[in-house]
Image 1 (cartoon, rainbow, N blue to C red):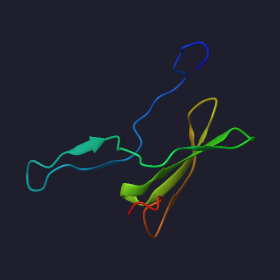
Image 2: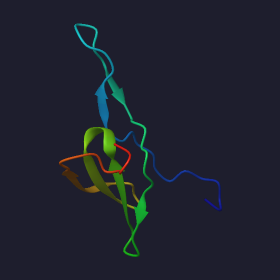
Image 3: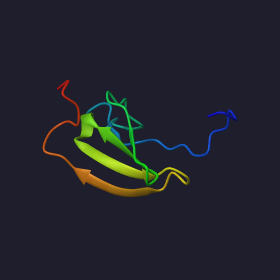
Length: 77
């Protein structure tokens, strides 16, 4: 951030934006919670609309872990 450079970027999640034969997938979703960054260099990002949480390598952006949750990952639902 201090250099003003983006190291990696990716759309997190997708969902149908309409029904029927014209249904399309929307890449990237809004996230109501913030990420959690560990001292070990893993960033955990909740995905409340698709009931999941994923962990990413802070240096490369590579997804290291993902789990489905029984409900949204924020208390706002």
